[in-house]
Length: 286
Image (cartoon, rainbow, N blue to C red; front, side, top):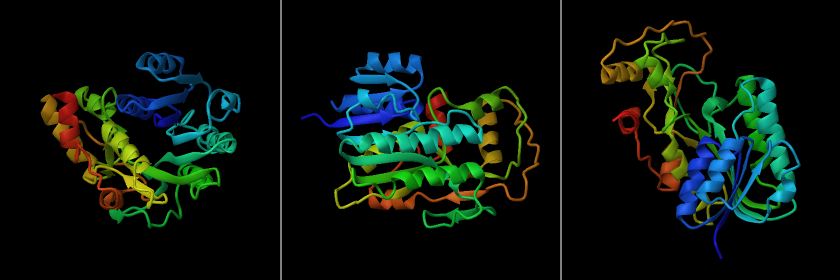
């Protein structure tokens, strides 16, 4: 029997995950709200592609809730608080309702390092306090709580708290530097990044983890936190342009922390292919 995987919110990360899973000869199904993405997924060989918003219940009858793996990597419907509620809270509730009719071995939800409010360049592990987090970060925490710990219809669940995602077709920072666009905020603020392909490999590491791993919350970055100014200067040198200026107007409570990914590296023997922004951007820019 083929391994079965359903990807909910199959966009930038989900499409790359689908491609790798298909290469493994898994049976892949997907939910996306974007029709163009849906056509691409069908052309790749995804078995069942449903065009719908995750927060709706209308898709439930089109996807089998009996799955080896389910990955919810939905993005916010909009950057507003309402958009977060729609995609993360109502979307997660909808996914849990769908799964009630079946059985899933491993469920994974992609969250964000924005759940950590720490400042002062503190090193942050998964045990760090999330007290004082922003409203959007609080909504992500609430969404995490809907699947972790898992309900009875899920054997185990994982939460991946991702850093800033970049990769093929998504390198906005590099484009800004190349075009000389001035930067908001402080040059010294830390960026915690993760390449798309490393996000996919980490998702697979969780899903394929030994059954003794009953599910975990893992931070997911390249573990090479770097100042924004350092990254911008490197990119400017790469493009042979002058580095753009920073407005240096961060508020005192703007999150500024170094996210540790040592837990997933140690427990799942996972490591990034792109261990810093240098390797990652070199692969993108040549």
